[in-house]
Amino acid sequence: MKKENVSIEDVLTAISDNTALVLFNTIALAEGSPIQIRKIGLTTRQYYSKLSRLTRTGLVTRKNGKYFLTLLGKIIFEIHVTACKALSYHWKLKAIESIQMAAPEGTTLPEEEFSKVVDTLIDDYEIKSMVTRALTSMENHEKFLRQQNGEQAIRVELKAF
Image (cartoon, rainbow, N blue to C red; front, side):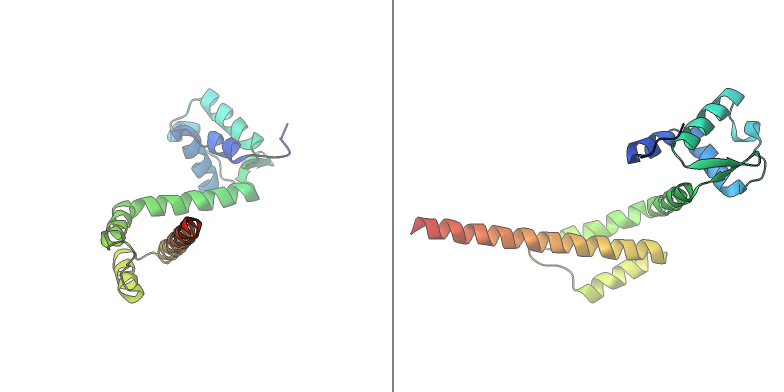
């Protein structure tokens, strides 16, 4: 029986261990082709247990005796692929953060220079776009906090009068 509402916790639990993730990826890549349980290192019991959980959470469906990803499953698979790509840039992302953090407080590397650094280190367009969005949102958050702190300082000064 499928639940009407699936939570992010349900999805993450369904693919949380390596064997479940291998099965999920295998179904995604097999596109309805038969899956050889032994080749992916699962016992029959593990296979059906993991498959049951993936089906209950709505990530996988069975059609004509074959298993396919549902639309939700395809979206989660794409997110998984993107996360794997991001992880492959882990040290380069750390380097970008280090460059950003090295700037004195209240200053940032000129946008053009920072873009050159990102372009040099990150060659995947999707990851590059995510880095740019993340940095922009961080800068906007920092501006907001500085503005809030400035307003609080003015309030404190006004109360002193």
